[in-house]
Structures are given as C-alpha cells and as structure tokens.
Length: 452
Image (cartoon, rainbow, N blue to C red):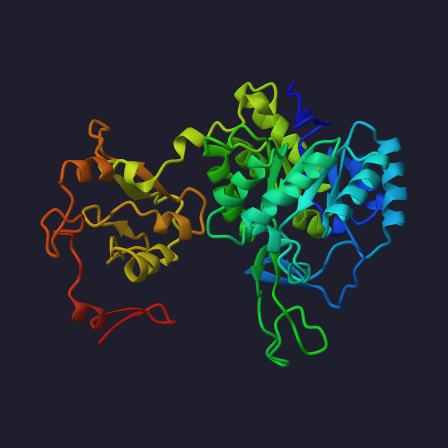
C-alpha cells in the first residue's frame, strides 16, 4: 500500500495534506480538530504584532451552481495575543508530536524577527513559514506582498531569518508579480530551506449594486482582497512549474498552494514538483473532513500506478511542459460526436459558429449536428462546452510521422514573414462570407429556424 509520509525540508509529517495559514488555523482548537480528522500538518495563522480586523471580511465569486468558485478575504494576520497562540501551539505540538505544526510569521525589524523566531521555536514549532504574500492591509505597512514583490528586501529578510532560526524555514511567495522566478531566486540565494506558493491574488470580486462599494462591504466602503479557491488553481500550477523547472531553484522543496480541493488537485500539484500541499478555501467551504477524500483518492492513484511514495511521481509532468515554440505543428486533432450520447442541445454548434471556426453544421433532418472535418482545427472548444461527458471527443488523425516546430521553422527561415504569406497557417481555410451571418439565423424559442 502507498506510504503517504513526507519529509519536507526536514519537516516530517504523516501525509502531504497540510492546512495553509488562514482562518482554519487560527487556534489550537481548530488545528487539533484537523489533525484528528487526518491532516498531516498545519501552518498556524500568521503571527506578528496583533492587529484589528474589520467586519465583514469575506467575498466570493459564484459560477452557475458552484458556490465559492473564487473566494476573497480582507482579513489580516492573527488578531490574538502572541501569548495565547504560543500557549496553544505548545499544547498542539505536545499532543501531536509527529505532525507538521509550522509557525507563519510576519514582523518588521530584524530584532522582531529574532525575538519571534525564538518564541515559536520554544513553543515546539517544527518549521517557520515567512508570509511575504498578504496583498491587503499588511502590505500597506511595508510587510506581506510589499516584501514578496521586492526581491532585494525579500533576500535580506530571509537572510535575517536563516541566521536566527534553528528549524527549517519556508519562504511563502506572492503571486502578485510579473515574474515569479525573481523572488524565488532571491529566497534560494538567501538559503531558504523551502518555498511555498501561491499566496492570494490581489483582486476585487464584485461591486454591491446598492452601495457601489466592492465586496466585502465595510460601512459603505471596500478594498482589494486576497483571491483564492478553485479559480486560482491554474495560476498556482503555472507558477509552481516555473520554479520547479528552474535550474537554480528545482532542488528546493516546494509546498503547493492554490485552489486545492480534491485528490486530483493534489496529484497535479505533486506531478509539477510539489512535495506537500496546503489547503485553505476548501476547508473553509466543506470542513476538515475533505481530507478523507484526498487521502483515499491519492492512495488509489498511487496503488493503480504502482507508486510507493509521492516522491516516485513528484515532478513527473515537468518534462512535458515546454514553450509554445517547441510544440509539434504537424499534430492534427479532429472532433468526433458520439451520436448515441448527443442530446441535440446545439451548444457545440453555437460555440463553434460564434466563437471558433464554423466547423459544425446543424442537421437538415434529425437532431444530431455533425463535424465539418475540413474546417475543424482541433481547438477543443466543442468538447469543452458539451454538457454530456465524452459525447464529443478529440481524436488524432495524423499518423505521427512528422514533427515540425515553430522554432525549427524559424531557424530554417520558413515562417510567414509577409502580411499575405502563403505559409500562413490559415491560408485557404474556409470562412463564410460576412453577409452569410445575416442570412442563416438560429432556432428561435419555438425551435424553428428563421431566415432573413
């Protein structure tokens, strides 16, 4: 059976499922409850000089029937006295000595860093995470993402911490940068033991149409918050990949954060190089019990694939992530509609005709649309919008014998280099004449097609 235990930069845990520093880790009560439910670690809600929070604090983006597809908060670091947090941390580490109880820290001066590091070490913390990501409130005081966006400042502070700490140090990075490699390299150059990412994305999730203030509304006003949840997972995976592929960073352990909700999410983060994962929004939405699904799913995946530990497949997807210029221009995919599964909703036709390449036609009889193969460019849009699982699939139609990339064509001086170049990819591709848009109309609400 799969062994889920991890040793992350010297921090041991029974599994890679950790709670991120956030409201679910605000107290020893919550962390003990999480450990009892099956979580392997928790990063304590960020400790520093106690602050004062506002009310309300959370906002969300809902999509269709999905609540909290994206989640935003303007809550700050712990507003509880440090003494209370340290007392509870001692209780947690004594009761669960084999779990990864990590102290997230955010302070200002070098003296403050030394002082608080000593105190959390005395409280039994197994590691320290440096919060360089908070995009609201704390950054206005020169901390949080103000540090994460400044590689020089980040490197200096990580250096201070490394000089003072006797336990492993994890540097948590902000996604609110144009190039994640810069802060990542700064942390590695300052000898951080590990990296975690991403912290929340600076955002406004919506506007109240009565008060005209952004959500969450605080006495008629609002501010940007930190965006997280399933909606940010693609951003997190991309930034994880950037760090895990970099020659000077890839040897540094990385804890993956951002939109993790299911066992599949966990596997994807590990495949791109993470060797622990941190969860916040999903725990806030569904409770600590979600870890049971994560554990069962990860074990089944590993057993099915023959993996004994997560290190057997960590980073296994990285060789398949390349730059666009190295992709095979000769690979040819076409859509195929399974007539037995099609419900005749015409969503694929609408999407393709309005948003893609006019490669689907409606039937003159019956209800099943069909693919115009000579027009199909294999873009996937129809298969993505189809509401029936595996009704529309993408099938490769070339024989795989040719492999030509944009980079190779560039080196051979064979790329289009004039405005009307015959070598253009869309040269000769059928596109309806503009006036045809006004001739054939879609079905009206009665189901009849109208013609102008």
